[in-house]
Image 1 (cartoon, rainbow, N blue to C red):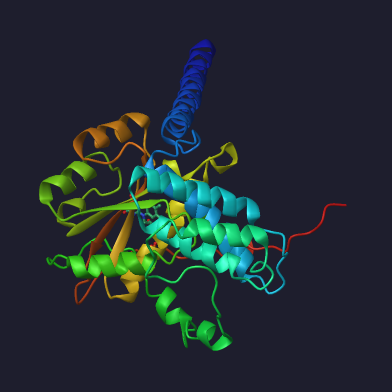
Image 2 (cartoon, rainbow, N blue to C red; image 1 turned 120 degrees about the horizontal axis):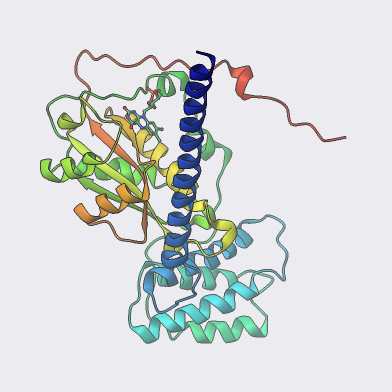
Length: 336
Ligand SMILES: Cc1cc2nc3c(=O)[nH]c(=O)nc-3n(C[C@H](O)[C@H](O)[C@H](O)COP(=O)(O)O)c2cc1C
């Protein structure tokens, strides 16, 4: 009897051990999958002839100049390295004949940089001014730095922020009515004000209301049982690995994509449209399977799927109470 009990315990221990090994192995395979994607699709081979890669490099440079332009007490010697890199990128763009948004932004920022009182009379500013004449395009948008008063800032203040934040719930059942493109685009444009590393905005959002496409997307998603069928609109939030250049940035695409996703949910909430985030914490196998069913660019990492729709007159949601504040907050103290 005793030895039978021991054998059962051994058996259970073995099962737990196998489960443990399985977890370690699948975890490792997942890390390897992400690592391979970062190596293959990431922006660290500095392939400047790839327009998207060049654009990310440009925004990285011109944002540094924007920062330099925005400081009240700026270092008068700062920024010249970025100026030369931007000029180089502009020349490559001109040679390739593909002038886009970022080239126009770069030119305007360079013009503002050399017009600074501390730069305007420098010889290198004069040379740069002459060089910039070669580029016969201009941006219609405003780039660089601008005045931003306290009253501008205060326009964002809400009388009762609780009314906004505490009325958002994940909704899983929606009215039988789709959300128009106009509203989808408006919410995404609002959400694009989300901050991102060096303002790179390495995001891409896919949208569908097509039943077949929705079913393909939800097939391998593991949290939509019993409501997935009736979701009116689906978004897939992705980030572009090409926008991340170095090893320390290896997780940045998850961070920037997560921030955008939350902004999209709040933007819809502000417009009276409900959402439910649907996780894409997936095995490499399922990630590949989804990509075999729908056209998602290989360099785009899927951050999450969002279900979108209008709430009914009466709805039922999970309370999803929040943890006691004290559990998630403490004062940071210096180590002795
Ligand atoms: C990244 C992420 C993934 C989620 N995945 C799912 C999911 O697969 N299925 C689901 O029903 N809810 C999902 N949720 C919704 C959460 O369950 C919900 O946000 C949480 O319970 C808090 O509730 P609230 O959003 O109503 O405040 C997800 C939320 C996040 C942020």
